[in-house]
Length: 221
Image 1 (cartoon, rainbow, N blue to C red):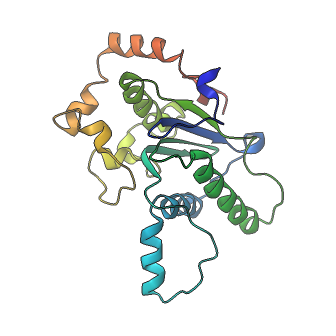
Image 2 (cartoon, helix red, strand yellow; image 1 turned 180 degrees about the vertical axis):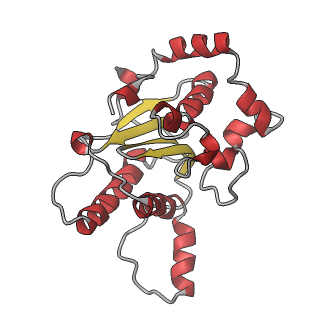
């Protein structure tokens, strides 16, 4: 399927990125694991901030080589116990594969050291679905944010700590996401959420999106 050809990334293109643990194993065992993955993601999204922090702390050497600043925007995300979803825009010709490789390799090293294991942590190469239009963009954001409910982890998305949903409903003030690409299309956060409430429209959109990605990919996890 051409939409899954993750080896070809376009400048300003938006992609739904996802992967799971090898053998469907848990890749996040506790809160610390979730935080470390997000910290690895943040430092590569905003390397200029990390350099400032290092300067303040008078650290002359930073072991993990960071990526060029302003290369990517994270639109939304969800981390589940054995997989993750990221919606990312590539801002330059520097490919998304670079940031995913950096984050996952760094996190795998942390995870293996912490849990005294060896070998691959993630299953094969990550998957990437190119976002072809605005409708797909909106519904992919919903799909990502609804993961904890579909996975029977919680009943209210506001109670899940490891996704960007709370950023979108303004329960958090420390977002690493570029939210305006979605929220600027609506008068308010409430209207953004209300957009998805029409059952008929919901079903039509899901059927349409099957052509773009495996909408029920999380059943595999």
